[in-house]
Amino acid sequence: HLLDPRAGLLEMARVTRPGGLVVVAEPTNVMGPLIGDALAAPGLAVDDLAALFRFQVLCQRGKAEAGEGNDLLGEQLPGLLRAAGLVDVELRLNDRAQPILPPYDSGAARALVEEATDTIARDVWMWPRAQTRRYFVAGGGAPDDFDRLWTALFTERRRVLRAIADGRYVSAGGSLSYIAWGRKAAT
Image (cartoon, rainbow, N blue to C red; front, side, top):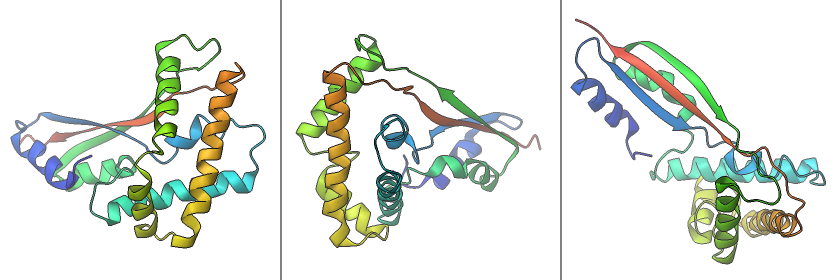
């Protein structure tokens, strides 16, 4: 989430003692917004799911193209650590499930319901609508497609809220993130 992650990693490597370890954690944001809801939606058509996934990727790429950060950085960590001069680079995928089940009384479930309700009311997805449109177009999306995809996204999000209100929503929840490290050469 740094505007210049390469510079950040170079500085981390610079201040690390010889033989020391630089450890970083970064989510993989490719699937996050879809994995808990859209993939679990039994009635969602494959073409609709593919369109939402495409929307997600175009927006993520557009954010990077706009120079406002790269939310798809996790997949690049090994190369970035090596480019910072680190050796013995390793990477692990950290998966953490947080099941969301009725009666939605766990902390994770309460947070999901609160966030979904709030962001839908404010017309915010990962970013506000105007910012999302800017990212979508910068990522290569056709401006004329944005409103249709935004509507489809919020239709799906409202479906999830209705299922929660009815006590029918179930999700494995969770997220994927990378834990990566590299060692500063001893000499």
